[in-house]
Length: 459
Image 1: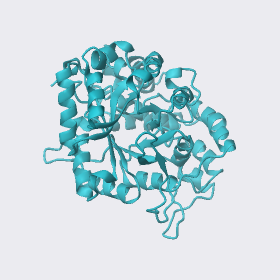
Image 2: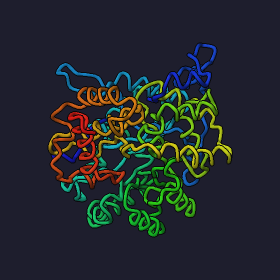
Image 3: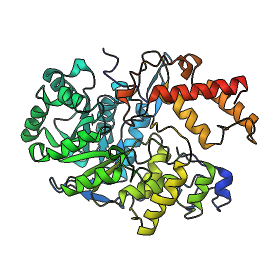
Image 4: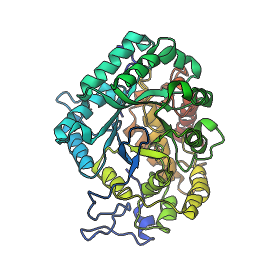
């Protein structure tokens, strides 16, 4: 099996002191909120906001369940496996509270996501017509480029998902590497034509693509809409990058191109891999001073859900508290006012951008590293320390000793030493796989230089 055949698997963070200053206390059964701003009252089962897919008439929950970041447990050999019992419980709870869109891929969770979702949906007791399944043609490896391999991947998806049709089928992550991979993966081998034939036959109800990367690929796809008739498109959009100068990351540009063509929009990474909920303490206070009862994450979900062409917003809800918080946000959705929207896009986005975090979403598309580095683990630790104020600029920083100790001890605890940034040989194999177009080797070198200065006391 090629190392790229399946990608490795992969909370809202807040500060008690900052929230307490805003009057947020521990919640109780009477419906107060906990210290992270999660409302603890009952979750309605009949208030979910739905959007209508104009082509099929599908009534789709605005909250979609991303089946990428699932809870794990250890097997008898100490290896991480999906905690299927917990997954089943999350799936049933989501369905019971109105969620009906589930997004997966052959590449997620070490290749186990589709099978896990198939098991969970079957165990839920709901009929096949009660929910929509979205999956992808994730033929990332050159060994998968042939028409035969693409067809085999699609047929396996049907088997794992325990269904005979896919509601929403995506060409997975076009844009990375430019048009070359699009030709290799879907055009020159006839696979896209075959998928269109499956749509005509009813085995695919809606055909679209997910986009990351080179905007020229996106523009090509838009220019060929009359030929391929995209039924929906999945893009990354959030209030921080809504007006990004890079059109490939500008939610506004991508969204408006779809609106022009009346193509329903599916949103991924509304929290930027969790970074828009795991914010510094005083940014948490910035939110809480405005609406103490709302979680930090709920603002991002309300922002993107308020866009009228959005069919559903995907969230990888690993834990029940994530699911419950998002259910409350969308049951029903309270659209943002124009003033709130401007406050997020301008004041709040500027505040968040002032922190030197690395644009890693912890998607793990860069994994496995051929030299064993835990690339997302390194970046997640660095970003966490930035948010907690544990990345001092110099030895003159007021909290230097405390921050130094927290960074170094936390680094060794979260990333094994043989998988840390100093082992990067700058091979650059990871770069084409990063949806955020991060220069990963350069960022790893930057982190390693910072670590070495902390260790040597030369910062």
